Image (cartoon, rainbow, N blue to C red):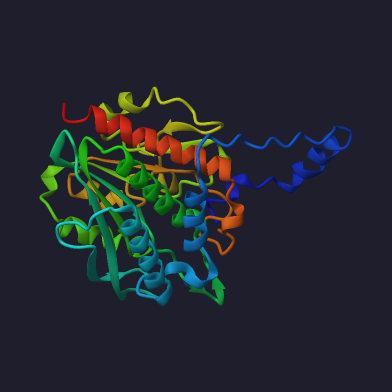
Length: 319
């Protein structure tokens, strides 16, 4: 509730605002221009993962298993190899629920692409595929949170299969983010290679609904200021541009995203991270976070920015 109340208009102002609008023409609706490219699969990935038959993708649920099978199928169709410890990393951990702690059985999904320049150094690209499931008979489909981040990650994997990265890349679709980052915590406890070989964790969480402020936010450059100059010159993609923040001591409570998603587990383990995601919107963690709310051009633009950011980091790090 507190995340949404700042957008409400006080009733004392509503009449004045309405009166002021009575004699004015309605504003023109501007449809964002679609970036050039084929985004059919990007949108299809979100549509499938946020469909009702995924049952909100809760950790340990049938819907979560169905989503996992889809993501594994997509990685295999792209030709993304399993990690050195396999395609799946199962785990058991205590997580959060509305009723209290509960033990969850989850599964992280892994795939890797070798690097051409620094193959022994890794960029770990992550996005959680779980959501909060079914509550009070309503399915929380989580189209933006976080079917969108998984789709962006899969699109990046497709691009890297066509044009190989300089660093080796491990893709991890995490389970259990909504239950307390439990999949990410398990990963950093038992990674497929030493943590000190990871040059960066790049985490995508909510990459679709950038129309709130026309920004894809980058969190983590306060902690790692050497990374900001590498991204600052990336141009906007259509109406969407990068913004930096949500990571300083002045950013309080829900406006501080340093530990807000799976990158928090990497940060706690001393691994350099960046988080990319959009700001809160009225459908955040509500059953209305559905595929039909996503504007294709906005999502395509933010995904292009995420991929451009990866390329800039990949080319500049470990020189």
